Image (cartoon, rainbow, N blue to C red; front, top):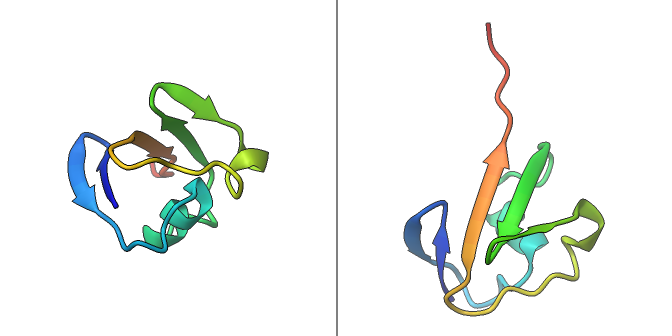
Length: 67
């Protein structure tokens, strides 16, 4: 599936179709993230059920600590 993720065109495996699977693909499933699909924020409890269509624009923001 072809998507735009954080401004970059990417092609993900065909089995990746939900927000949860995208996070798993990028190894972000255990991090605190905010996900936006086509300019709409997806609430965490919808990650598993929110299917992403071909060509969708995904923004993933995750927090990094430091000092």
